[in-house]
Image (cartoon, rainbow, N blue to C red; front, side, top):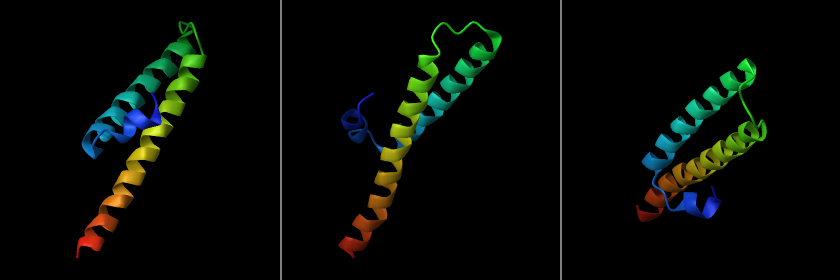
Length: 72
């Protein structure tokens, strides 16, 4: 998923997406340990995508209080 696509999402959507990605990574880890994971690159790709989502989420959360302070 591209960072530009993620920037368009709201904080709630990003939070929901991060939770889904964490669950997916958990399932991939289980499949890897069981030996049924066909591509280990999927695990690394999902971890990078989660990091992207969390980075955008942090940026949006830090920008929100700054925007509120600028209005006051």
